[in-house]
Image (cartoon, rainbow over the protein chains, first blue to last red):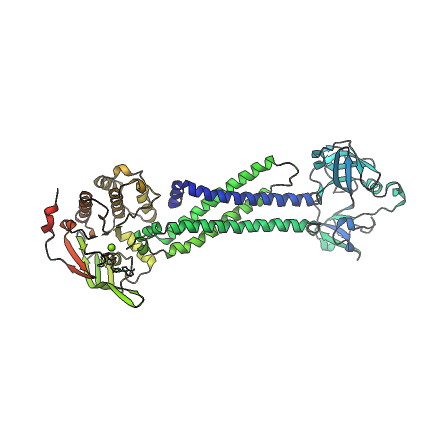
Length: 355
Length: 235
Ligand SMILES: Nc1ncnc2c1ncn2[C@@H]1O[C@H](COP(=O)(O)OP(=O)(O)O)[C@@H](O)[C@H]1O
Ligand SMILES: [Mg+2]
């Protein structure tokens, strides 16, 4: 530490530049992780909120909720500690100037997937819905009448709930009657009720028995099967992994150049009897300090930027993720330094002192 | 027992077909308290001799004993440790670390070795070297002479039993050169160290107890009394 610290103190510009580059890399890593997290939330938020273990869908739905359709009595709750019937319909909702794609969920008020109402009240009459509060941020309000695309029905917002987005659309929770009206308009009364799936809580998904035409899908599989979900998160994860490699390589190059420049200084110290081990430790300590500083500054910058971002940017910081990414970043940077150690070990003190 | 002993040592450098015997077979011993000069023209093998004696390179044949311990066949790691414990180098060019100030140059040695010079003795050393006021200065702020004196402080700080100086006065004017020689003389007589100074400046041999001359790799002790050349003495 002694050598490492004093060298940095006396070469501030040089080492600030390295910290600067690492700051940018870590900033990008943290931001991408926030973006990945935010985009995932956008898709799965409502599902995560259910806190369910699985969902029963039809075999032919290909784990796609809108494509799954069954009768409300096709599952009797066997093997589950709790279950909820779920109907779903996608539409575009318009209120005056405001327009937004929505996912309408038909549920029973006594089911466990009934959302907590954070403002206003729960739906009561047919046509009333509890909306995700991202709609409020877009300008929708309690009491607003929502016109729907493709049908003549209107819905009324009776309250708002938090964290209820499904496949990037805000969710409107309403009763089955509401959903039926939205689906079929005036002919609703003549139609059979259909549901899209059964959401289940259970200690063991394998204990649930369903007809051959149905399948039990674990929640995680259901989320990963959402259109675009896996593609998105894989892409972003790969970018983050590449950034890890980039930061290791950048540091390896910087430190290698610095080490080459210091060969004669290291050689003189080795002539005096300072061990290669001490010099190597010093370089590793230096890298650790540089990487740590860069990562911390990058972290602070990311959080600061988060405050100034418009709500439309789907960034959500998960501090646990960031902590792990930060630690990995510091770790791979130190790995980059190991590259220079062999150079230090090979320095011949005799050549360095020009004997 | 001799602090430093070379027994039938030689050094041959091979480059392609040609072989250069930089140091011809020679034996050498030095006791504590002796200040020894090695003189000879450029390319005669002075540095080769000194670096072999200091364990910086191995001889082609023969043995090197430091404090009775044969270091010839030790691994670099162990030789480094012996250099640290037993030997103080003063090199021709500055051997200071550019990003450490004078005080830190010596602090670095505390990080890698215990039982270095006590504070009181160190202060005396600083005073006698005239560098007490330079503690916060970096090598780039020092003159050549000041740097050389700091290098000497560094070499003495670890309490080595052997001090090897390769042309320590090369970058100094005469007055400074004489001062440096006095310092090294004191280290030998007062502290019982073996001091070997390589130089091609014959004026410096007046300080030395023994003088060896090296020509074309052949080391020979000069019989003439060192005091003969004391006409340069100005103190
Ligand atoms: N590493 C080496 N490889 C080949 N030849 C060397 C090497 N080191 C020294 N020599 C040769 O050995 C001879 C003695 O060199 P050196 O001990 O440096 O002389 P001095 O210090 O007296 O000027 C010179 O001819 C020099 O070219
Ligand atoms: Mg030489």
